[in-house]
Length: 337
Image (tube, rainbow, N blue to C red):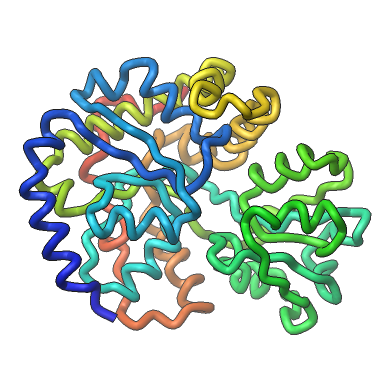
């Protein structure tokens, strides 16, 4: 369906009216998830003054998944956010003309995974047949599961899918109510460890290691806001890159910034979660060679083709609608090491 013209008109008007406020520094940032380890680089960038150096006063809000973050940005409630680009593709297909796009890739290798327990018989994709799989319906990893199933040749009809909520996902697996779950590799793994599941009993099937050629989460912007405030967006992305670069060099410092906002968090656990994201999702060979933030056109085309194999686009997919590299800093600041 077309993006609600009334909402878009209101958002555009709000963007125009609010531009002086935004231009004066205010930049609310919508995360897709809770204040956990992988969010630490943004809080570090805030505390280190990187956003302030760009003339920005940034407030960071937690979210409830990409399907929560994307509409927040599309409607203009937030000028900028963090979300799965694959969910963004589908959102734009279902809401043509919605003013939102990705401008900086963060998870070059997506953390979409099936996480199981070896003691419950799950160590390979084929082991899922005959088992119960817990999957939250809005989960980004669950949305990509059909591609994973197709690439690995498993018979989905032989898997019992149990819809679960995000808060009950890992407890269901820890309690043996399901044999595996879909989720982000670092989040589900560390949540299971926190619940007392031994590390050597956890099996992580990272979809990217099984032929799923997708990208992951990216910084997304409201395009009306970005068109009116390009330098603010560029400054925001520069600060994000600096925050990640510091987090890679000194994870403990970044986690300290996180703990100020989430004092109940386990520092060691969140440091491990952040390091998992760095090693598996952020600091890939492509990023080491090309810097953070950009995408490869051929790989993006492949990702769209894989998505087409399991999702019936209502409109012809167009990569230029999903990613705009024009706001990325060109001064070398995107090189992380």
